[in-house]
Length: 460
Image 1 (cartoon, rainbow, N blue to C red):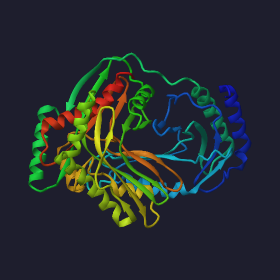
Image 2 (spheres, rainbow, N blue to C red):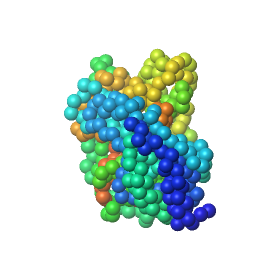
Image 3 (cartoon, rainbow, N blue to C red):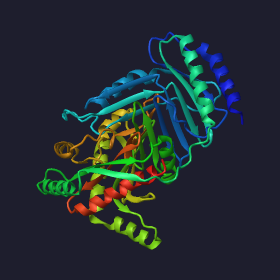
Image 4 (cartoon, rainbow, N blue to C red):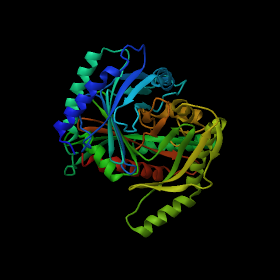
């Protein structure tokens, strides 16, 4: 294994050697050099400036990006459609050279908030973001690659000097061990919006609307403010979430003063060629330390009429969205259990083969928001929520992940989510309401879901 300074010298020399092959004067698009990273990173450094970090411990996959070769933001309800137009115009025109035959390919970050694509919902902050990093890392099963990217056309001298500076900042920092957990800190719970009384009222109104036939399901959300006695460290929080929830996708991104982070079990969709996988995830129960009690909770969840009904609504809506595009569609006859450390869910992975080429963002627009995070029918549920939710969800229950030049990739629903700034954090959790829902039981469900981030934040 090379020492950090040796690795830095080698990478800088190879970037300079092959920069002349880049089509610097091409009228549009992107260009990248892909190199093997000779020293495996010890962690993802928390450098100043824009960065994102995607990691799935169980799958041994990591993607991270620093700086911005291209960044397109839209904060309108039509943001998803506008970002899709931008992606379709730019990403297919991505020139790249894999210097070491690593087998890695280039990628961009893509994400959008809860109301992106929600035409007819004025006044919402609906973030959508397409983000190509200047310097990216990708690791899989212990092998790692480094990717340098620029927009085109560009000045060779200016860009290569910037790449050299970025490498000098990043490569030595990759050798610094990942931050370990701190001594658990006291967290102070602030206001919950809605509070307990407001939650009961919201659930009562939802059940009345369901009984009136306005919709079959709606997902109510709480926001909880926490403050700590020290600054919350995003890198430590990501590491803690990866340790506590190794089968979840951990996503972290920072653009301005705040950092957003999620540890989610729910994939919105994966697209490889014409192969699509979508997760139907709805119906939740707690876990128990005692094996017999835990098995009982699992059995109760699998046999619960209320939870099975809630889950079936999600499956039906996803199948309805995919069917017009699919040559084949595989839907499990029965849900299975997806068990996390603090909760267990009913889960049905749905697989399809598309009849024709489709891009990931077009599929996302068809699927989002799913009944698992919004309700069914989704337009009626979202209109009702916009009249009654007293805060903007922002990114929570949106989706984020990576997208490649072929416009395939993977997006994850942003659950177990927090926005942190300094020593403060806003946490979000929701519960699906259907006929038969009980307000106190649904409140406890949100407490279980908040517990995932609460536990990890103590060590950040």
